[in-house]
Image (cartoon, rainbow, N blue to C red):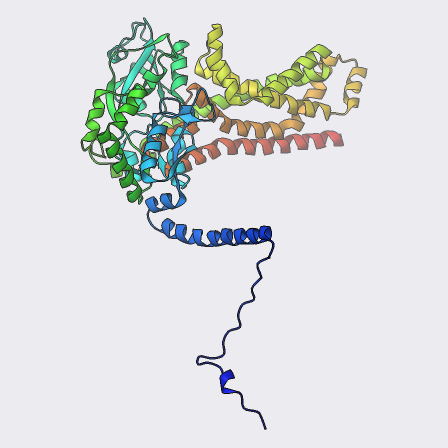
Length: 544
C-alpha cells in the first residue's frame, strides 16, 4: 500500500514548480566581485543595445542617426577649400566652412558629425551604398539629382568666377565669348561634372574648348603654367585660392548662379526636415552669416536664403525622355567619342612601350655595367611610383622648367614610359629563357653579337612573351582612365561625367563595360591566334 503524500507537500495549482536555474555565487574577493559585476553589465548592455537601435533602423533616418550617435556625411577633402581641406597646422584635421556647418547642425540634432572621405564625383554612389547619411561638398541643385535624391533647402547661393592670367587678354566672360584673332579656340578649364561645365557648354559657344580637371587647383595651375587660357570656378573656391596663384586674377564680375544643397536618400524625409530646421535657425541667428564671413565667402545673394526657393530649378525635375535607356540614344555618340580617345591612347603608347622595353632589356643583359645599373634604376623608379604621379610630373611640373607638353602628348608619353618598365622585365625574362647555346651557335656561324640578337635571339624571345605583352595591352586600355587627371576625357572619365550629371549610373555603366569588352576581346583572340600560329611554325621547324 502506497503512502499518501503530505498535503503540505502537494504540488500547487498549475503543475509542479520549475526547478530554479543554477546560479553562480559571486566571489567573496572584492576585486573578483567587481570584475564579475562589470562583465554582467557589459553583457546586459550588448543585449539591450541592438534591440533599441534595431527599432530605430527600422524607423526613420533621424532616429537611426540619433541612436547611433553619429551623423556621417560624405565629402572630399582632396577637393580643397573652402569646403573641406586639411588643416595646415594639423594635417590630420579637416577644416572648412562645410565642416563647421555640419558641426553646428549636428550640435542641434544631438549626434556628433563624422566626415567620410570620398571622391567628389562618386559621393552620391557612396550615399547609395548607405555608407553616409548625407552628401555635403558643394553639390549644386540640379534637376537630375533632385529626381534621384532628396535635397535639403539651400545653404549657400554660389556664382561662377572666371580666373585668367593677370594682365592678359581675358578680362571678363564676354572676352572668351569673342573669337580669338588667331582663329584658335579659348582653352577653358573646369571641374568635370560641375555647374561650371554646364554653364560653359551652354553659354560658351564654338570658340571655347572645354577641358576637364579633377580638382579646382589643378585647373588653376594649368592656367598659371600657360596650358589653359582661363578657368571657370565656383566663386568660393576662386576667392579662397586667389592668393595661392598670384599670377592669376578674378576676370570680371561673377556670372550665373546656383544653390548648394545637401543630398540624402529618398525616404529620409525626417532627417532632411531636421537639417532644414537647423539651417533655418542658423540663418535667423546670424551664425551662418558669421561663418561665411570668416571664410570670406559671404555675398549679398545670401540674403535670399531666407526666402523659399524651389527645389527643381528650371521647371520639372527631369523629363522622361532623359531617363532610363533613352539616355544611351542621346549620349551614345559622346561615349563613343571617349572610347575613341581610349583607343588612341592605347594603340599609340603600347608600341612605344614595347620598343623602349625591348631596348632596356637588351641594355640590361648585354650592355656595359654603368648602362645596366642606370637602366635597372629606371625600371625600379618607374615601377615604384604611381602612374598618376608620373602624369602629374609630365603635365604640371615640366612647364615650370619651360617644357610644356600638350595633354595628348603627355598622356601618350606617360603611359609609354610607365609600361616600358614592365615590358622591359617581360622581355628580359623572354631573352633569358633562350638557351645559351643559341647565341654560341650563331657566333660560331660567323654572326656578330648584334646580328645574332636581331636574327636569332630576339625573334624567339618575342614568341615567348606574346601572352604577357598582350595581357599588358589589355590592361593598358583600363589604365588610360588615369589620364583624366591631365584633362583627357577617355571612356571612364566620360562615364563618370554622364552618370553624375544625368543619374544614369546603371545604363552608362553597362554601356561602358560593353565598350571595354569590344576593345579588349579582339586582342585576346589575336593573342591566341598568334600563339597557335607561332607554335605550329615552331613544331614544324623542330621536325625539319
